[in-house]
Image 1 (cartoon, rainbow, N blue to C red):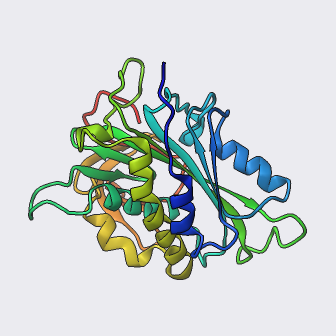
Image 2: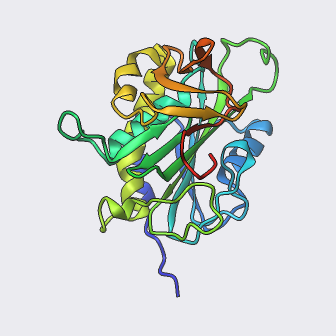
Image 3: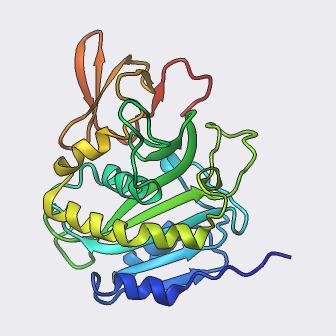
Amino acid sequence: MTQPIHWNAEALWEAIAPQLPGFTVEVLPTIDSSNTELMRRARDGLTDPVLLIAEQQTQGRGRLGRNWVSGVGDSLMFSLGLPLAPRDWSGLSLAVGVSVAESLQPQLPAAGAAPKIGIKWPNDLWLEGDRKLAGILIETASFVGGQQHDMTAPRYVVIGIGINVRPRPGDGMRTAPACLQELDAALDAPTALACILPNLVAEVQSFARHGFAPLMQRFAQRDLLAGREVNLSDGTSGMAQGVAADGGFLVRTATGLQAVTSSEISVRPAGSPLQA
């Protein structure tokens, strides 16, 4: 029988409420998708800040509509919803990736060594060996009642994060999985969430004020594609050259330096037998 998970929701609320007035924490035993639920609420006019934790998702979604399926306690799955009005939305998924990676692995290794947790553009965290640890899915909804066409107006953003906590089989998966317990066998989903959430909220608020540019160096320290041959899903290949100030992926191809900004383009290290 599965043991109940103790999330310590009150402590999570106390850590975040001063930064986000009106903030609430909800834990649901099962739901189709935490992102889908918060987007439904936003369309119904419910746009207060909220953390929605799903112990199990029946229709969890990743980028490009891919499924995220996990047993209770095997993964940390949550969505953070809040109103946001950044000057430029570009690079938000990278800012979230930097925040989560730094929370889970605060110390970088000695010079010349790769960090255990790297960021794969545009929205994945991978563990050494090109194995997927976590995925990030960001969605936005315009507020009801005007200004939907004003790009500077606040929008409701839903930041969904799924992280493998326990080992899982990779059969049928596009990318081999990794898990948090490879970093620390004592880590469980509530402990990881308590570690991640305060930094995540602070980083998102900082992004709204300053954009992605101030994070470029921190991202570069964990950019696992930089300097590698990559294949884009449109058939183009080249050498990854980091990211631009707006978070666009830079790749040097036979025709010159290209900036890839579309979230519909997958990037894969060349030579990998797996698909992104």
